[in-house]
Length: 279
Image (tube, helix red, strand yellow):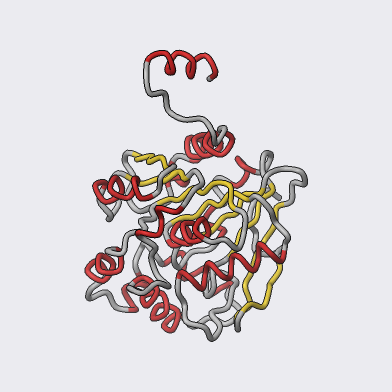
């Protein structure tokens, strides 16, 4: 059962909500935590879960209000999703984990990397910027979009069908209001920015070449995350690259996660030759 089926998981009550998580157990292997994007669920990762199952102890969390997790009473923010993830991690007594987050889940991954509450070894983000200009960009992009547009758009319709079928307390219109508030949040509970300079773990940042956020904005973000690598994927927009290129995505991600964190790019020809011999 190397996928997220939304049948074998558990709920944990956290700050007024019931948060759903699912474990694909592989004792003795490193833990890889999956965090989905906005309006999605951990089932979105199913195209690649079998490609990671032999090498990792896998945990997935449906974000607050998403999938089988209830929205609860707390304000929906990236900080709140961070706290929810930390509570699940502590509940499961996970140590030295890797975090893989798509879109909103990637923003949470950045926040987890900044947190001192848990031990994170590496993060992988997909389509996730962490600039304080993101709320303004989101407001511009979604200006004039109605609730019905979300519910009937090709981009979100499948997510809402899943939400309606699986969520214990579905309320699509309230959910959309809360999601937009999170996307447009300009406070410290929203997107990290300058603080990312204190991220001291390796980060693989994956971006579709045709993403709504520009390549320039991602390149500008790299110096603010000192030990980061940008992987720009051709022929993709703000969509999970693992849907179109599952084998390619899994191989690059596993290479990154398994690589010695201490290794650095060669600075001269002698170092390059030594680096090449090691590889």
